[in-house]
Length: 137
Image (tube, rainbow, N blue to C red; front, top):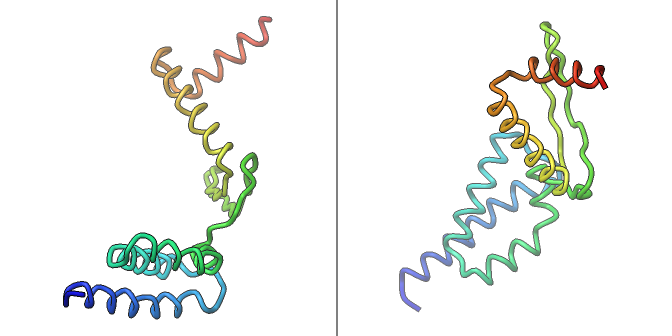
């Protein structure tokens, strides 16, 4: 083993102890610590052989996902995790979505954006046109 590879292994192992410090509490971290944990994992991945990193991640996946706030969502569901109403009547909404819902939202959103471009209208105009068309039927 050459010196450079030995340094990489020591670096990765030292960073793994830092990761343990972040995931040992088995609770979700704040955003700053999530960013730090993600960075540590990227550096460990960089300095590790792929098989070694995959094994390390698999052994710690549940604790890492908890710390990063990653939850296993059913593919066809979504959950509102935060709702903050603003004085102007709008709202800030955080949601977690499953893979099927994410795909459908992206697909439908893209279709709507194309429709807006084709009709050269904004969202309110499109809504008004659709409501008028529906009431005429």
